[in-house]
Length: 263
Image: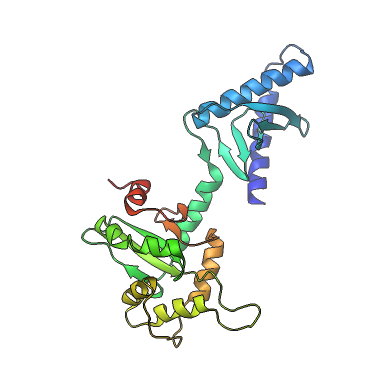
């Protein structure tokens, strides 16, 4: 609903500006669509820095919205002045050299705030060595293969000045829907959180070593799962950078540092 409200406001402003332009000579509908297609192609191509082809274009809602079908079948909607576009549910400002993803920027700000509000005592933390350059937040599961692969990169991340903060995200959930019993994923990850040395227990569990079953603590597993839903986690590992950017999946340490912007 927020995206729709923002989009309608943008359309309203753009339509007012569009209507104020000097009227063009009348031409037939086919020629109008051809010219509009060329304008749409040029605007998107310039903003994204790569050629885009339009298969079909039409004006909707009394010419307040332009709908275009791209060569790959994607459907996009644009303001009449072609300054803003909705693509796959996200609102973009089509700037000359690079598109501004308004939706993603807003979500980044939200995630940044949610991560900043976390209390370290509720997390499993692997501190950066030497100067801490940044912090990443990782939603993890004990048995997930790519979670284990990422954990093998933690030492390298720490060497690069990156602190890793783990949040619990057992893929099987808290309870089995059929039996009502606690899932194995939940019991493993809660045992890590209840351990006297969480970091050591996490590493042992990731290496498939036996750790002591311990569910007798007030670990915030359910809260982490709920937070994961809120920030868009759909699988593990899921990484939220300090500035709120979201990375869904595994990334090698040096590549991740480059993505973050570390030298």
